[in-house]
Image (cartoon, rainbow, N blue to C red; front, side, top):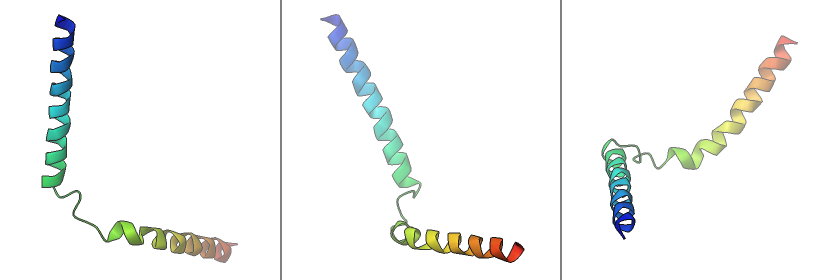
Length: 59
């Protein structure tokens, strides 16, 4: 029975660590940019095309 209390205490401690990390991430502004992820995929293709053009000019 003692091990159950120990495991419950450990799980609550780990949950508090994760809660603290979540609060810290929100306060530091890591989730403020909502525009860039939606258009990031559009810019990836253009970079590849430009790299291929640069390679063909060197050849």
